[in-house]
Length: 571
Image 1: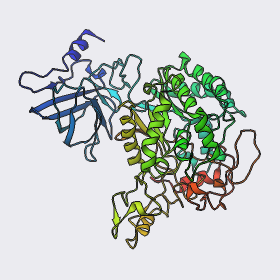
Image 2 (image 1 turned 45 degrees about the horizontal axis):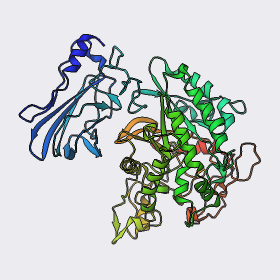
Image 3 (image 1 turned 30 degrees about the horizontal axis):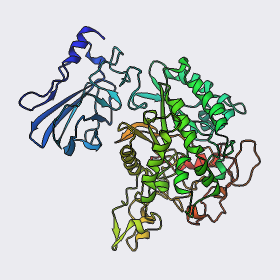
Image 4 (image 1 turned 135 degrees about the vertical axis):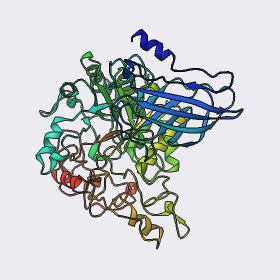
């Protein structure tokens, strides 16, 4: 950094004077300041014994934006009580201000202002650090220009790895998508790379291994930032409630998981050749939530899940993976958090957060090894339900009493993810964690998509007539008929959300419709059989599965075509 920039940055923050007015002032842009990707002018305009009014102006020196979110944290007990010109939320000391619908556009060199009232006691110390979409403001990013990703610490780590970055397009998935009629419309979308057995690390059945994917990502990266999305998915006794996704390791093979699966992955990711990539790892889909909902005296309990709860190998395996992978500076771990139709009930939400904290502090892991959480992976829960809310009533009955909602606290994935993030912070996860939502198959468009609320003749007709999610039951998870592609992958789409992602590659089966012999350790689950009449986990409803499906992870052309037909937003 030049001495000119050092002097400038030293002048950016001015502490409170005797008058009680505090200012974090940003001067005009002299030569070279464009290397500061964004600046924040935070002013306390009025202050009294128990509160204050603040005004904030954000200037964007990077690429133009259509939405934005500014974050900072307080050192004291300041609490935002009301705001204007931004949607302001607070979790503990962490504050997020996101655009309103009318001021989301932020051009290169453009500014936007908002304000708020807040309470406090003691000292009203100024925030010392601000980020815009995960990029640290008021600090030279070292790029010599306005487009860098910014870093919040010397290692180059950023608050949100997706901000300002391209995301890796898997050439194997892309080729399959492009070969489908109409598939070229989405074949350039980024999807997750699934490491679902030991052989996948080096490449199984002629497919690309981990190094091959990372090398391809480097080639795609160019001079910008690039995210690579990996699914780490091979726990002992994997997915104890769904046979279709059973894994190769038995319930007691925790040592094999550590030494033959996690350790080799960590060794490859730690190679300095890949240090310039932002590597997002999604850790063990459908593991920990099973220990909350499918054990003990619950009607949904399975002997396999009881075994995994008793031997502790889910918790140990997740903790070990977080610790080993979290030690690599450019790896960002996101832990699986189920979905609203799994842990959104009052008796599931808090216990899930507590269990996740237990796993994240076991086997040498700490909460610092967790960049965030991912919801709805390989699932179908609608992102938003615009035709009804959890607070609606029909003829005096709450929508929570409907058969579809069934006393859940949430009816959609976005509000669930945001609320669960707050719950996770409350049990000790870092206030800067972000959420990912898998939108690969939750669009629910097409001719069956309702255009308004259902009839108010009963709470069931109201909910069923208006809900976008057209599944028979929210517990149905296998190759669902009528599903469509959801929101396209994008960074920072909503408060607390790091990205919408397609972690489950569209067109890859959830499981076979009938038993198929295989050497991949995958069983046959009747929930993938369209003739199945259900079990307690879907309240004994029909499975809603498509017919003629191949093994999980194998290409399912009919499903891919359906997803494109029913995409929302439409293709």
